[in-house]
Structures are given as structure tokens and as C-alpha cells.
Image (tube, rainbow, N blue to C red; front, side):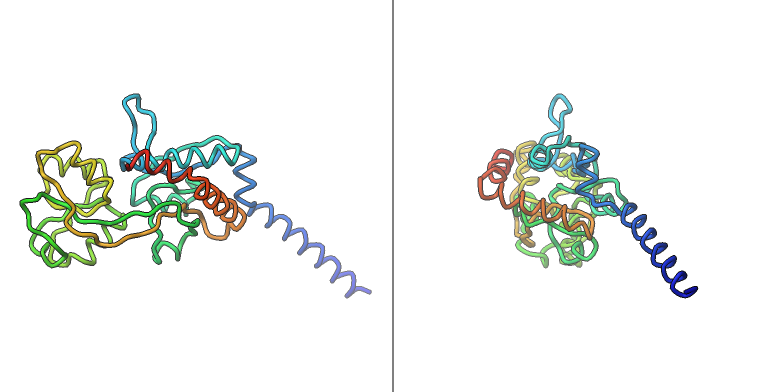
Amino acid sequence: MIRRSFLLRSALAFAAFATVLGTAHADMLDDIRAAKKVRVAIDLGSPPFGTTDGTMKATGSDVETARLLAKDLGVELEIVQTTGANRVPFLQTGKADLVISSLSVTPERERVIDFSAPYAQIQAVVAGPKTVAVKGFEDLAGKQLATARGTTNDKLATEGAKGAQIVRFDDDATLVTAITSGQVDLFATSPAIVKTVTDKAPGRGIETKFVMKSFPLGIGMRKGETRLKSWVNDWVQKNTANGQLASIYKKFHG
């Protein structure tokens, strides 16, 4: 009788503990809906994915993608400004619920965060003036190669251009300024940033030299949020099928 009473008390105590634990680790999709707000990390120094217009309003393909997602989720969008290097840490530390910020899907990132189904594709390229002869990584030996810190471009440049001096900038905006001003000639980036540079400084004669790699872009989220991931995947599938995501991408990237 005493043993049965002890077992009953133990079972009740465990059930209470499990309830408290479950409450403490609430489902993020429910949390977002309860808060009526989704916090999305976006790099606003990475045009045309994320930037600000003349009135300092956030704009760009990733910004519009985030706005559409928040609208379909029925909540307000809160943009959490980040940099390329801080996109994954902002998820891990709870500063953001999602990352929509030209975040390429790589095995290294998949080990620490979850991704949605791809919503776009991106190339990682090396670009520079037409007067500089570069056809591959081997031609970069002894040259400076600029890139945005903590990005896939940074990783590919560091691994591929062994003999180059890698010059890192905090974000794409400062990278663009360095290239347009002639501070550095060669840079590892995306085609969108190459276009931004050529638009700002046509006299520099910038061209794409070679493609380092192509990647799918995914929406990043913390691991274990299965309901949130399922909802986002369904959303990506729906807006891929109806052409909304392609329309947003074309508007900003041409």
C-alpha cells in the first residue's frame, strides 16, 4: 500500500513536471500567433535583397517576401536588422523567429538550424574590372579579393582563393562602397551586387569573372520547430505555384 502510494505520488509529480516543461517550451508557431507578430531577421545592407529607400523605408526582395509571409500568417512583421555574419546567431539566441536574408542552404548551416524548402536561387560569383584578367581561383593568387564577412561568398572565397588576400567588409553596402570607390578591384558576391556596382559606377567596367557555386535560398528557423517549418514549407509551395515569389524576385532582380 505504501509502495503504491509512493508510485502514485511519483507519477503525479512527473506529470506536473512534464506539463511545466511543455509550457516552458511552447510551440513557436503558437507563440508568433499569440504575439500577433513575427520577427524576421533581414540584412538591410544587402541590396536588392534588403535595403532602405529614400524615405528610409525597408525594401528589397527579401523584405517583400517577409511582408507577404506575415500577411498570410495574419500577423504584423517586425524586421530585425542583421548582418550576414549574424543571421544564424540571431536565430540561435532568440532575437528572431525567422531569417529571410539571402540565406543559402549549406550543409554547415543545416547542422545548426532548419531551412524551409527553397524560395529562390542564388549564385556566388567573382567579379572585377574588365582590365583585370581572371578566369578562376588560380588567377587570384597575390591579388586582393573583397567580400562580405560571414557569408557563403566569404567561405567559398577563403576556401578557393588560397593565394589571395581576403578583404572582409561588414556587409554588402560597405563592400559596394569599397568597389565603386576603387578601394578594391576584385570581389566575391552575388550577381545582384554586381549589378548594383555597375549601376553605381559604370565607369569601373565591372564584369562577372566566374561562378564559384550556385545555391538555393531558404527561410531559416531554429531546429525542432516542426509545426512552424511545416507551415512555412506549405507557404513556400503555395506562393511558388501561384507565381507570387517569382514576381517579387523579378521586381527587384530583373
